[in-house]
Length: 302
Image 1 (cartoon, rainbow, N blue to C red):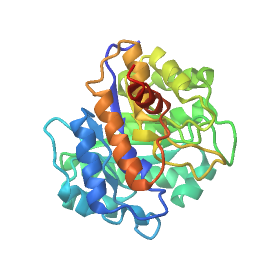
Image 2 (image 1 turned 120 degrees about the vertical axis):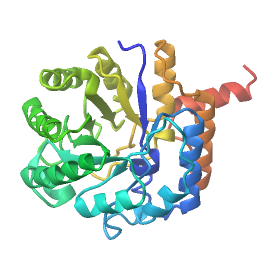
Image 3 (image 1 turned 180 degrees about the vertical axis):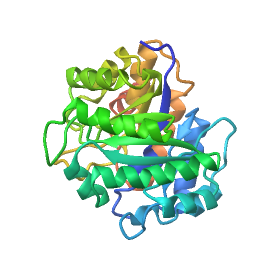
């Protein structure tokens, strides 16, 4: 088990992008500022994608201009192509995220191109971003199950991971996009990728559709993975899987890591308050079980 874990907060981007009702720009800015005040070292701020496809991210430049950038905190942004990269650079981004998929069907449905076409596009993005001094993170979707193809072989994940590594991605995220993984499968995939890429450069991204996210994170930790994506209050649905509850809640991950004695630098109580803030704006309760339980305990004076 690692003694310290880096939490990558994806709520402001991955968590909000599927919200049907537009979230005000000032709310997004306030959410990001509160997350950094709670101690999150990395906050995925927004995405420079077509507003036609993701209208919730149309205010990306305004968000980047409005946030209070805290020294030592990273604010990566998602970019699908060179046009997105150029817009991100103009907005002052210092780190970008490119995203591929482990299956052809998901790649075509999600980005309207084959895996090879997507990688060629990302290669151009990475080359320009690195030349301009930006850091690049690579995300791989549906590594542990695909809504169109079902089981995903570890070799398919390894192939994409090695391509992203060759492009210069400093960190590569293995994502269980639809939340179907189990701990055994999680271990197999991370062990397969770690044969080619140092485990210190791998991250895990888990959805909790089947209630397995924390168990899968525990398995990833056992492989030496020390970077984890999560979303405050469990924000974010999954449009590709019926009954999906979205990203694992940062509060729940924190509660487990605290119990394991693993350092994160994040204040759990401040984080719960951030979850209360955004859930109040969205008009619904938190998905975090730890947040609900700790608040009930506080109300009872225990």
